[in-house]
Structure formats: structure tokens, C-alpha cells
Amino acid sequence: MLMNVFDRIAEHYDSPKQLELATIIKNEIKSKLGNTSDKIALDYGCGTGLIGLQMADDFKEILFVDPSKEMIRIVDQKVEQKNQVNAKTIVGSFSKGDTLGIKADIIIVSLVLLHVPDTLDILKSLFQALNSKGQILIVDFDKNKKISHEKVHNGFSQAKLKKQMEEIGFNSVSSETFYYGEKLFMKQDASMFSLKAWR
Image (cartoon, rainbow, N blue to C red; front, side, top):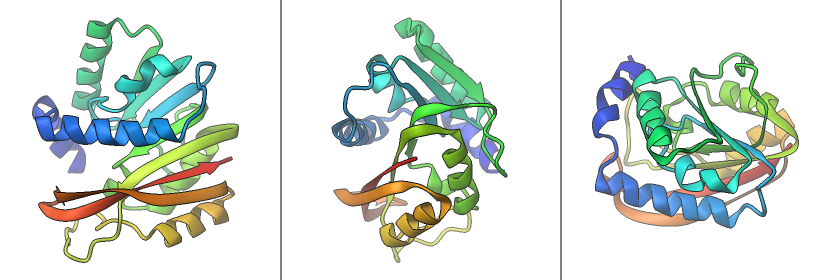
């Protein structure tokens, strides 16, 4: 059901508001990374590639993975237009430990967890996909009591998420709230956090 939703909205996803938000998130992620020119990156749940494509030149290679074939179709178009030779796309999702045979040095997971019913399952899979001494950067919404939706988490407690990740085996987990915006999340004022961890 959810995939059909993303397939339907793919063509109109890149609104001015989404583009502005993607740039804010991209700047936050870049501020947490050092020199990544020899690294393989994975943009997991990449949507139309709004964030990863802005950073593609910073990596040796970047993989775009999304369960929505329509989202990936749009990423493919952009990759072709930009002649982004170091980019690859895959339609698929991680679940129950299946990582599609992917290994990466850096994993970016931006506004994805809120759509994933089993957060622990996806975090375990992302851990498996991360190379030794690799790092993961997660951006999502802080817990928001004003939001209630059967298909979407109403944000996350940073402390609870950090604890889950440490139990899985992630190291040096740190997070901070970095942005607050009006009508940012389901038409409610909300804040976003970034979380960084190592394998």
C-alpha cells in the first residue's frame, strides 16, 4: 500500500518545499562528514535522490536504493541528465537481514525511518550493510505528540533510538536537534535531528 503511494507521488515529489528541505538536510549531513572521496555511499530510501545527488561528487561511488520503482526511475533520469558516472540505482528494500548484497562505507538515511514499521529490523539490516569502521547518518523528526497517523511514526526519541543502535552494535552514537520549522511534518511545526554512528 505505502509503495503505491510513493509510486503515485514520485512525479510531483520535487516541490520547492521539498527542495529547500533537502538542501537543509544535505548541509547538515555534509557538516558531519570528512573527506569521503575514497568512500562508497548508500542513500537508503533515497526517494527522487534529492539529497544524495547533491553530494554524489563527494564520493567514489554512490548507490541509490528505494522500494518505489517510480522514485528510482526519476533518480535514473537525473543521473543521466547530470552524467553522474559514479551513481548506481537499485529498486528494493532491506528487511529481515537481507541487504541486497550491498556494502557501503557511509549510509545516509534521511526521513526514512518514520515510514518503516519495524525500526529495529531496518537498523539491524543497515548495520549489516555497513563496512567495518563505516558510519551511518540518520536524519528524522523528533517525537511529536501532535501527530497521529497509522502509517507513519510520529517522530523518534533520540535517546531511545541511540539505545537501540548501541544494542545492535553501533559505536560512538551521537545525535542533536539541528532544525525547527513551521508546518514541517504532517502540517505541524516540528524539529529534525541528525544522528551519527560508527560500525
